Length: 283
Image 1 (cartoon, rainbow, N blue to C red):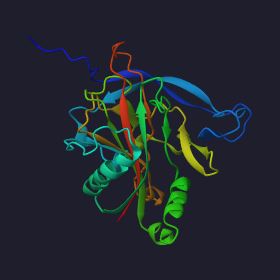
Image 2 (tube, rainbow, N blue to C red):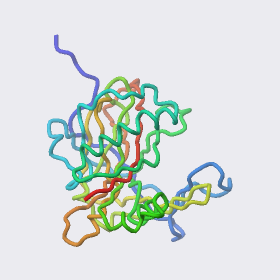
Image 3 (cartoon, rainbow, N blue to C red):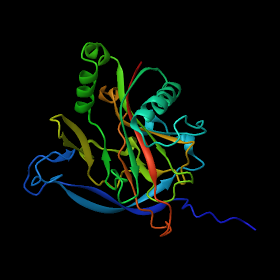
C-alpha cells in the first residue's frame, strides 16, 4: 500500500503580508527589545495582503544560486554536535563553527566569516520568537557597512574594499519534515529597487540598524522547498557588495517570509527553526 505523505508539496497560492507606508507620512520604524516606552507603537507602518504563487523547488534545487537568486539550498549536511538548541552558549560553541565551515565550503572565494547573532523561532504561543509572517529583508547596504565598522573598527576600511556580504543560514529544528509555516523566498533577479523600503530598526540599547520592508510587485517570483529537513540549510543573502557595481548582474538581497500554507493539516506540528547571521568576506 502506498504511503500518503501529510507534507504539502508542489506549487501553492498563499497570502503574503507586504508593506504599507505610515499614514502620517513619517519615516517607518521597528522597535527591538522590551525597554522602549510603553506608549510607543512597536512599528508605525501597515499591512498589505496579496495572494501569491509560491513555486516548490523540489527536484530543481541546484538551479538556484546566491549570485543569481540570493538564496541557495544546501543538502546532506551532517548531524550537528548541538542537539538541543536551547542554550545560547552551547549553540555558539557547537553550532557556530559548523555554520562557519558550511559558508566557507559553499561560497566560492569566501575566506573570513564573522557570525554576529542567531534567532530561534518556535510556533508555541509562549515562545520568545515565532515565525515571521511578513515579507522583509534583514539588512540594507547602509546597515551592513555599519556592522562591518562596528565589529571591525581597525580593519573596516580594508574589509569594505573587498567583497562583503551578509548571509543568513536557516534550518528547521523539527525532527520531522517541515509541514506548517514553511519559509518562502523571492529571487533577487525579480526584485526591483522601488520594491525595497528601508526601515529604521531601533534597539532598546540605543543602536539603530536598518532592515527593509517590501512593496508588493506581481513581477516578483516566489519559491520554497517543501518539507525541509534537519540535514538541509537554506542560505539567505541579505546583501552583497557586488550588487553596488554597475553591470554586475548581482542583486544580492532576497525577500523572505514564513507563510501559512492553506493545505496544512490543522493538527500539524508547529515549525521550529534557527537562523544564524554572518558577515562573509572574500574575493
